[in-house]
Length: 417
Image (cartoon, rainbow, N blue to C red; front, side, top):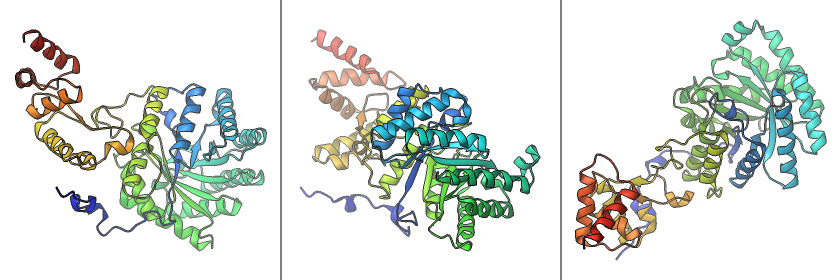
C-alpha cells in the first residue's frame, strides 16, 4: 500500500501568495496579559498567589517571552504578588521577562522601581495613557497635558534604568497628529517600545495595518528604525481579535499581547492559546506546545472561568464527533496505520500536536462504525447483536449518549446473552 506524503494529502491554500515569515522582524515575541488585563474581567477571580506562580511557569514552558505580572497601583495585595512573582522568576532562572502596567504617574512607577531594586530584576514599565478624542473630552485633557504626563512618566522610569513601553489606550480611535506628537515625545524621553491598543475592540484588519504602518513611519522618520519596537494589544468586541493579531504581525508589529482563553474586560482579549496554536500551524514559531492544554486548564481553574464546550483545543468538543460519516473517515484512516492522516482527515488542528486525541462517540447521527470503534477502544467484544442494540438505543435519542448510557446497554445485552 502506498502512503501519501503530507504535501500530497493536503493542499494548503493558507500558504498561497502569502509572505513568510509573517513577522517582518523575523521572529515573533509574545506578551501574556492574563494576570493583569485578563483578571480585570468583571467575571474573573483574582487567583491565589500559588496559582499565579503555576501560570507563569506554564507561560515560560510555552516559550512566551514576556508577561505582565500585575498592577502595583491596585493596592498592597497586588504589590505583594508582584514581588513574589518577580522573585520566582529570579529564583528559577526563567527566560520569561516580567513587566508591570502603570498609569502615567510617577507615584505609580515608584513602587516598580522599588520592587525591581529589592528583587534584583528589571521590570519593564508599561505606562498607559488614553489618547483618543473621546477620552480626552471625558477627562478634560488637552494635548499639552497628555505630553506632560506621558513625558514625565517615561523619563522617570528611564532615569531609573527600567525599560519603558509607552502604551496609548484606544490608539485605534486616536488622531494621527496626536499620536505622532505622543510617540515622538515618549521616544525622546526614553521609551524603547510603543504599544498600540485596540482597547475597545474597534479595529478591523485594515485598520490594524494602517495604524501600524503609521506608527512605523513615525519611528522611521526619527531615525529610530530597529531601535524602537511595536506592540499590538487587541480586544475581541467584534470577534476579530485573533485575526487582527495575525494582521498586526504582517503589518510590522513584533510583539503581540494576549490572555489565556481570551479572558478580559467585556468580551475579552486576543486568546494567547489560540494565537500560539495558529502561529505553530503557520510555521511562525517552533515552541513546544505540549503544555498548552494544561495552561488553558490552569487558567480556567485559577480564574474560575469555564471553558466553552466548542472552544478551540481546550473545549471538550474540540476533537469529538458522533457523526457517522466523520467517524468512518477517521476509522478508515486509522486502519491504514496512518496516525498522521487520522488526526487530520476531519480536523484542521492535529490533536496529538497539542496533547489531545480524536474522540469518536455514539449518537443519533452515528453508524455501526462508531459503535464498533467505541467498543474496540474500551477492549469490549464487538458482537454484531451488541452493536445493533447500542445503535438502536442511540437512534431512539436526539443527542450523543453518555459513557454510562452505552455501558448500561452493554451490561443489559450481556445479561441477556
